[in-house]
Image 1 (tube, rainbow, N blue to C red):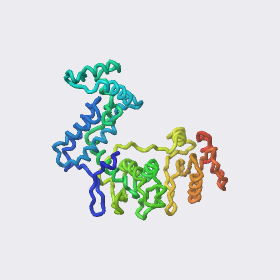
Image 2: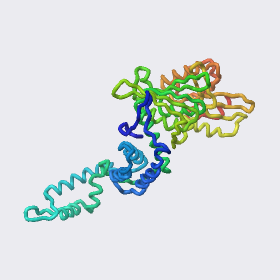
Image 3: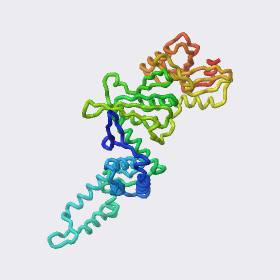
Image 4: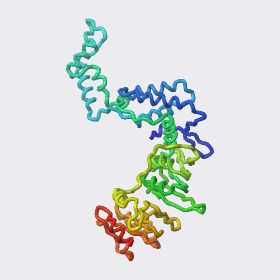
Length: 398
């Protein structure tokens, strides 16, 4: 992602609008993007500062391009690049040795005379012999620990110029969210997927169902209940590319100015045309659930077919999505929740949720190490050690 210093945005009637490259106004950027990719693809062995200098040179005649936009392109290209770095401090040790050997010959001159006898070329050769490296090797390694002197090793790159430009547009939106104090998402089609992405971004959420059938998801973090804070801005920014891959949503974030009490809204929806290359979220919360689903397979067992998170339970303003739904050939449906990871707070919240939805008979797979309280519906609870056994599930379902 971009740094805050590389963010470019305009403010209009309470709305914040991140810098955006469009196909009409910036159609010529496609050629510039291809040239930028070529510089990095053909730049193996070149220093970071040389690559960035070449990128800036591309835009010398581009009047409508602020320096921050060019630096943002460089940052995004660097994210897909691998550089040789001095991880063991060899460059610092080499500098000490070279400078110590050169100090006694100071000053060095190109053409020695009776007053200044130390020839630069001769001294360099002497130092190279002493160090056991050629002077060219010394020059490459002398400042290998300085960021701008890192040399390009590999470049993963972007699939196309269009992908680089699309990534820039998304990155500027992410940079705006660094100062977000809250976010609300209205979802209709990909509700469960959006909720899963929010969990992966470590965002807390509250959910309401609206009269038009949409779900209102309010996102924030633990300390936001105490005071308004920007500390979850990075999490909002990480969540955004995943949200862009979903359908049927719109988003509004409240952005707090860092040097004043002013706030602006940042609104987004699929109609804005932003695209993302984010891969689909992991289907399972844990390896335990994934292994169980793989063992069960796609074919029915005793007439029961397994569906991952196939049911949304709603009670007033509380929503619960059980881990699994078993659907019988006859049409009957049985829900199952896995209780694996635990803390006292987690167990308390889980018990409260199950109590809220006590009108649903939900099978519970509870880990052996968990101190689970005895309840009236103990016939719906079974224990597991390291894996959930299919036989135990079928026994409880039947």
